[in-house]
Amino acid sequence: MKSFQLIRALLLLSLARGKPVVVRKRMVGGQEAIKGHNPWQAIVWIPGQYYCGGSLISSNFVLTAAHCLEVLDVSSVIVILGAYKITGNPKEEISVPVKRIVVHPSYNQSDNSADIALIELTQNVLYTQNIRPVCLPSASAVFAPGQSCVVTGWGYLELNRTKPKPVILQEAEVRLISTEQCRNYYERKGVGPLVADGLICAMDILGRSGPCLGDSGGPLVCYKGERRFLVGVVTFASGCGGEPPSVYTSVSIYIDWIEKYVDSTEDYCYRVRGQSCAGKRRINMIPLLQALLLFNLGLLGINGATECGIPLVSRRIMGGQDSQEGRWPWQVSLRRNGKHFCGGTLISNLWVVSAAHCFPNPSIASSVTVFLGSYKIGQPDGNEVPIAVKRVYNNSTYHNEGDSGDISLIELVKEVTYTNYILPVCLPDSTVTFPRGLKCWVTGWGNIKYGSSLPSPKTLQEVAVPLINATECDGYYQTPTSAGTSTLRVRNDMICAGYLNGGKDSCQGDSGGPLVCSTGYQWFLAGVVSFGEGCGEPYRPGVCTLLTAYSEWIVSNVHNASVNVKSATFSGPIISLDNTATPTSSIDNAAPSIISSILHVIWMTVLLFCL
Image (cartoon, rainbow, N blue to C red):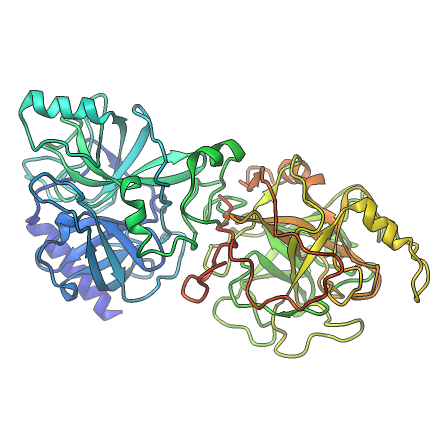
């Protein structure tokens, strides 16, 4: 702690001196940013000399301008993340040493071409509300002239530098202009260097705001859907303010170079406050915009739900395996008097979805605690967060076990803080369909077989199962087995998951937990574990409440909370209903990774991640 305070003190001293080595840019005519709205903003600091801006693009890489890092030894650079006030709270900020600096090989100081550099950190950072990566555009991404974007930094407020640099992060709205228009401006005015290929320009149309000295290397961020994309890196401008245009290195042009070093499968990039779901960071903008509106990742109000109770045959993972910590960050444990009784799924920072049968009497809500970030129930760690329940909403159509409407909304007494271990899942809208045999996952702490509880330390279990539509599944339930003919019916608002030969299924204690499916980009909640006969019995797959039948009900009952309800297309992988092979120990490679330091290919992305 003392070392961090010393670093902050030295940084403040550097600010007072106001002597940046590279005379480039801050937010003239802008305004103070809102805390937490730019969680990718980094400070690239060279103690005793100067600092630049930067952007967190993964758990261990920051993108900045090459001119900020000329002739610098790695040991002389420090990256500060989570800062808002430079005199801010050290509990929210972190200072990370640099492992290596990678300057683009084509960087040319004379014409500012390829003015872009990567900073690899010595460690993976833990994502919080104030520390989260920005999204990277694809090489084909188009951000048209006239689009409104935001540039942020702690640079000077005026060119003559008579006033000190601001302590609070500043932001300014600017609009993109064509490279041709920008080039013509600089040539006509005869000011500043020529605008080389690979550079983009932006300016305040009123000529009042823009970056200034000290903003170099910082982010130019633009919206696409509900995501924020790093479109440019602050490079230069001949003045401070809206005129002449400020010039940025285009990120999309260098995305292939960036992805040689940065893991493109990890994704927690920021989405508009509303929260996010997880997914791959590199996005082809055209199909993305056609397919869906993206949700926010750590910031949606949705960007949760919990439940409790006993199902017809409440359920846990039969024939499954231990999951990896952080792989399912939306999974919650509902406990009463310290005992787990149902699962649930976080859908926003205030709401959890679970099963109505977990709450036969919703008035017990005050005695229920939702545990988020849980992994080993018998050995809790620092990632687990308990939150009390404010109220429970059961769907009005549900009355008895096996009925339609076995879904419940749980409102928490306070908003949760997202971490690598606590993130919401995406919700499918009513138009989404799930193909037969789609490989999805059920998770929970239920019994490992009928009548046998999960042994200590009660590690979260996962199992891959194929989907079965309601009509086909109901036919299986009407098929006589050695146990007799079932009296249960599978209705249209339900979906089944499991193998015809049995062996893998949810079981007692898994009720209310998630059935999730991946688009290959994001994880969606397909169902809420509801009921079944036995655990892993032949022709008795697990039955879940189908989320698409209740997405509108959820939205109408979460009040002003932002939840990630979106369209999606699921095309695979498809697995045979007869396949009883043991699932692999890793989740589909397309799944987004939640704990980047541990998982290289997996969530949400999803958020997806939701916001």
